[in-house]
Length: 235
Image (cartoon, rainbow, N blue to C red; front, top):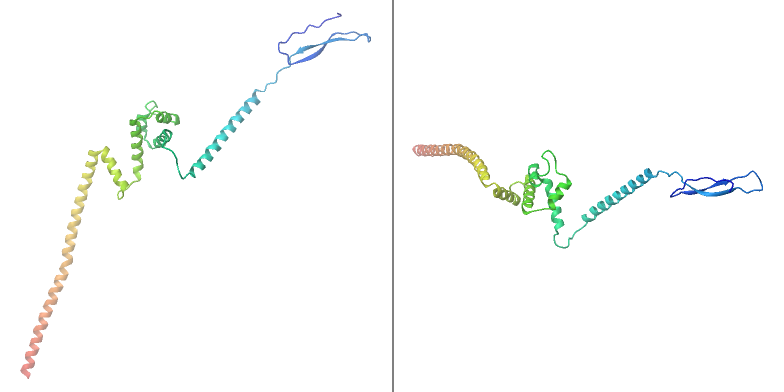
């Protein structure tokens, strides 16, 4: 062997390269060569991979958004529901009803949430996933309390409202009722006094007029009698 070429071995070569290990200037002789592994510097595709992964993630989000929007449109067209009321539907109902709760009542349901913070979506989900009779009663009553703000007396909902308040605040409601009843009675008495005065004043002119008419009639009768007597004396 005329010569040799030492090449570092690669565990995982990317490609092979031809290397001349013996050369000669004699045109009659053929150079001796061999192929040795050569590591090619790797190309960094991490940025492109990350970009494609984000693109796929966003495409998935768009797909889900479209599914939800189409589902909303679909449910609006439903005219008939089937099956018994499910536990999931009950949980959803309480979840939406919780939006009417005041902050102090929310603290009763979610004591772990700091006082200077507001419950988020996950906090409310934890509540409906662990509903108790006490929690359900609090949510329903808070919802009813808020909705009654638009209720006025004069219809059945007004009666329901008063019954609801009487159930939870009987003594306070009795005090409120008494206070306003006293005010009403005083106003009623004043109105009745004014009506009595107006009735008396209105009747007096009619009595005077009747007396005047009666006097005028009596005088006319007397005058007629005098005229008749005079006519008889002339005759």
